[in-house]
Amino acid sequence: QVQLVESGGGLVQPGGSLSLSCTASGSIFSVAVMGWYRQAPGKQRELVATINQNSNTNYADFVKGRFAVSRDNAKNTVYLQMNSLKPEDTDVYYCFAAIQTRSWGSWDPYWGQGTQVTVSS
Image (cartoon, rainbow, N blue to C red; front, top):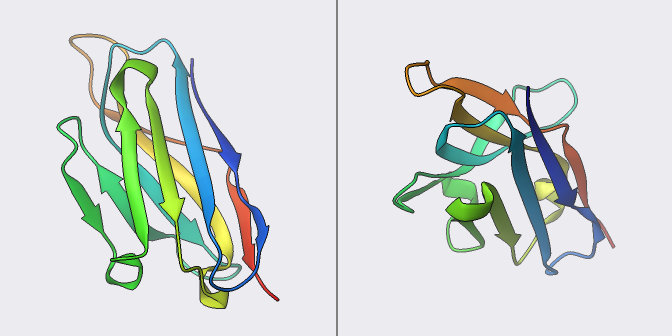
C-alpha cells in the first residue's frame, strides 16, 4: 500500500503566499517524478509543476516565476511554494508521484487526497 498525504493549503489574500507539502509512505522501492496538479469544479485536472529525482523541474506557464517546486528524496516529500497568489489560483491541489513498489515493478501513478487553496480578499 502506498499513500500520499498532503498538508498546507487554506485561505490567503491576493498577493499572499502558501506552502504545500506531500509525503509518500508505504511499500516504496523508488520514487521517480513528483509534482502537483490542480482542478477546479467541472474542469480537467491540469499540471502545475513537476520535479524528477535529479531536481529537474517543469512548470505550467501560468505559475512560472511565482511557484517553486522542490523535493526531499530521503523523505519522499515534495513541496510547492506558492507566491504572488491570484484569485484564479483558487483550486483543489493534488500531489502526484510515480512510484515503484518493487525493483522489478512498473512505475505507477499515485495521487494525494487534494487540498483546497482559496485566494480571496
